[in-house]
Length: 145
Image 1 (cartoon, rainbow, N blue to C red):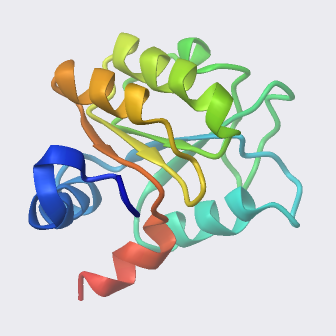
Image 2 (cartoon, rainbow, N blue to C red):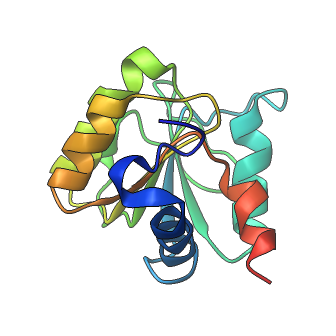
Image 3 (cartoon, rainbow, N blue to C red):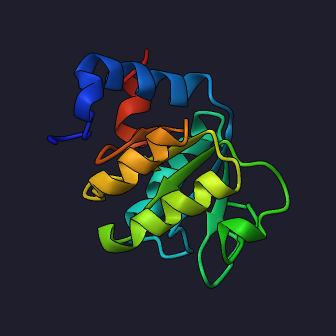
């Protein structure tokens, strides 16, 4: 499955999924792996999401407040609905995060650049949840115009 892992959906369907997640799925994004570490990609991407009107929710074992938003140790600890789960963890851990996202009722899962798990992609899509893999919303959202 190449970049984005559109799989059987094809690149046109993937582009539509990206657009749907960024414009119509909802504005509450749990960012798994987000901490106060300025050097990490999650920190900068979360800031971009905020600039585009998204509410970010840091999810990290340290449960730090980041960019003015209270953090939580896990997705299950978040006491309100989450629309999109943006995943900044190692590919071997990402599938479990996708499964947890489905379990909490997230509408979409977004695996960041370099995060690839085709089996998790298939499970998530089979559960009726939108998913994008190996992409970055901070790159994709400005392309929407």
